[in-house]
Every structure is written in structure tokens, then in C-alpha cells.
Length: 306
Image (cartoon, rainbow, N blue to C red; front, side):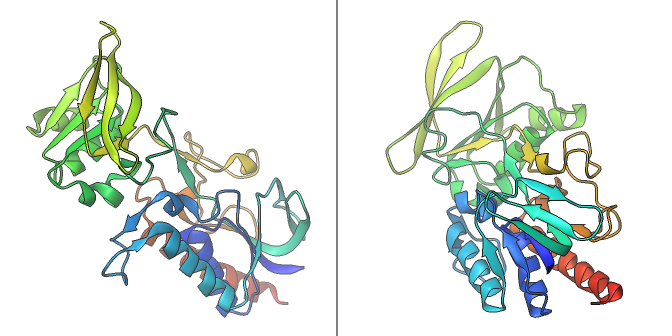
């Protein structure tokens, strides 16, 4: 019987592991197939405190993992495929084993929705991005393209005008899905060009970074190439919550609904990070949430007795 099993190994999960381990709870982290979370697809991280020169995303997550391991965290590779979150003990099953625990912290995160374009995966982190606040800084005075038509796309485009010399928003229809206030803000911004009735067909690079995108007008069929340094996909995120269908309450987008603090509605089950936060979605806020979940979990376990 373990004191706590943590699902996920991004900033939230590993911070929770550090705090739990230092509290002598000997946590077990089920890393997931995408171990390290979204930062594994990020090159330079320059907005995380303590790294004035910046740090590569994978290097940061390796440091998180080393720190958690130093205090006694055990790591299990692969995905959790089944969980039992009621009764005693709670259980988490992988392909290899079933782990019994007194408490579970869910930090499975979220995944950006991808377009599935040729070149998209190849240039992820090298011009292709899914987070303007994470990466906008790297495209100062460059041509930037955002694809999407909802509030997320408008927010990203407006933010990116701080850096790019021009931001082109590619949308497949002739009107935006965004709320009126967000659409009006984008339309009123001189640095934003709205490109209607257009889809992106390919991300083009030079082997090192993005150089342009190939687009097609869906009405005329005309194909053109638009030079750009940054290509931001802003069509939303998908929380990694499939495992908890019918087990925990979720909103209409599939994000978990937390109770007070990091508590869920189930006894001994806590949550942290992007799995329930679709507003901030930053490494530093996820890490903070991991800390809170670990402290809540530690105090709850203390109340239950050994």
C-alpha cells in the first residue's frame, strides 16, 4: 500500500512529487506515455523564475524529475489504463501492475489540439507553437501566423502583436466564432490581418526552423505561400481526462471540476495543473497547483491516521 500515487509527470505532477517526497510519503509517479508534459515540446523557457538565461523545456523537466527522485519518489513508465477512485484502497493500474494507494493526485494535464499538417510535428518548438504567452517573445519583428477563429485565437493574436511586425489570422470561414468583444478587438488592431476562407495545408521550413506556410483559399482553390517565422495553432486544448469519464465531474470541455482547493468530490483524490485549469496554462501555475495538491494531500492523510 502506497501513501500517494501521482498521475502525470509535467510541472504539476513532479512538483507534487517533490512536496510529497519531502513529507516522507514516498510517492509513486505514473509518468504517462508523454512523460514530462507539454514542456517536452518547448525549446527555450524564459519565463520560469530561477533561470535568467532560459532553459530548454526537456532540460527543465529532467531537473524536476531529478529533484523528485532525490527525495525518494518512485517512477513508473507508461500510462495508467484503469483507476478505482472509491473505497479503500484506491487503485491505479498500468499495463504492468496495479498499485494500491491511500490517496491519488491527478495531474494528467492537457494536450494542444493539432492540425495534423505536414511539417507541423517536425517544426514543433522550432517555429510551430501552441502557446503565445510561452513563445511569443521569440518572434520579435517577425511575420507571425495564427490559425483559428475562436476566442483563444483572438487572445493569442492580440498578445502576439506585442512582438510580431504583423500577425495574420487564418480562418476557414468568412466570420469568426469568437465572442463579439474579442472579434472587435482583433478587427480594430492595425497589426492584425484577418485572412478569410482559407486553410493551412503545410508548414514549410529549411530543416532548422519555419520559413513559411502553404495556404489554400477554399472558395477559389488558389494556393499561395505566406512567409512567417512563427506559426501558432490556436484551435484549443484537450484535457487528458478520458480515464476519469463517469468517475469525476467535468465541464463541457472535459476539464475536471475541482472542489475546495485541490480536493475533488471523492475522498482522497486531488487534482493539479492543466487537467482542471484552462485559463492560465503555464508551467509556473501548474507547479504551484502541484504544491497545493501535495500539501492538501499530506494534511488529509495526516487526518486519516496511519
